[in-house]
Length: 466
Image (cartoon, rainbow, N blue to C red; front, side, top):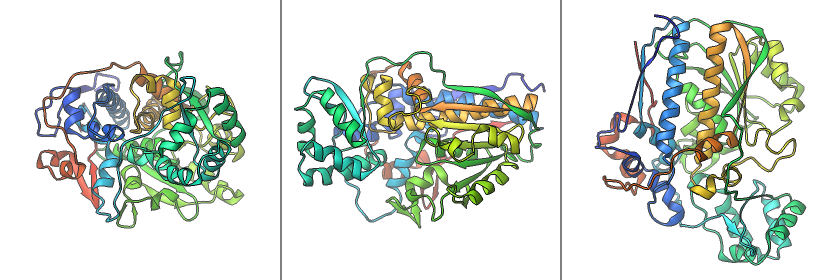
């Protein structure tokens, strides 16, 4: 079989889910997307974007690339299949894990959340991951301390809960001021602020591949999984980067995750399953973990030694951090010729060297996505992880064919722009709407698509065959 012969593909609505699903609306209803997206609105709500379908198409493309990589390495995979339902379950994996963790601490899911609206009618998002910045911003606006305190927890946790009920006094306060004034306060206090744009930026590809010096060959295939025997060194945080690494893990790669001494702080974020955050496990289980202090010369030297034996280096550091640590693409290529060096950024080159915080909701606002279909689901983080993994697979295929390494640049913005160009749907479901993820997890009709490992996770979304 020739390496670049056609890989047979199959994309269905339901896949292993034993339900009569016949369209995007059915999948969103049955597989939990309407439930999670609707938390912000207080009731299940259709995500107007055909999101599950776009994710499924992305997964199928990745499966084709993985099969071609496997062929070159001696594993004659002939076909790959996935489904829109499996894509939807991947999308809600962190919410599903949290719902089934068995943690006794309640997680209130009251409706509400940004975007905010200024007195002159500008819709905008703000962002800070630092409670001191949050406090300073609202203090300059003379907000009541109790409202500032209560709002912080909800604001910080919206990435995990998909809802953000803020004190009405905060919402009213910014609604009394023009956007120009709010932007000045944000600049003074370190708060990132981005207005909701009606149009997407143009000319931004999903990812870019840049050749790196040196050549190397991929190891021969040693198992049925298409990426078995390939080693990925991952240094990431939050969701976008870890999800990219998780997808490579599901395809059979050995992913070595580098965490700081003491471990990633998100390991302790409730709800807890066993001794670890359920949401953290949703995108990090199955990875080998090493703890290294990258703020020391010794730690950076250890990473370079590990990279010498890796096929992929993946990170999502802030702009300039790789160069500061002497761990940029050139540094890695010198110790590992032919390496695939992947940077999953927030903004790419959109704002130069000093961008706003590159998080899901700010990117939704700037990309035009929030103007089309605003959501407090992490739709951009998830799709950004998919786009990054796609770029890595493309670069690995190029390496398998030529021996050449590549730098892969993707971003949340590039993912959001692609989503913004996708079709909008308004159809209604013809199946019952999921309103409880614990019930979904226990439903025997989903059994073939889920696995329980302390809490419940989706199985790999791909099926490969020879």
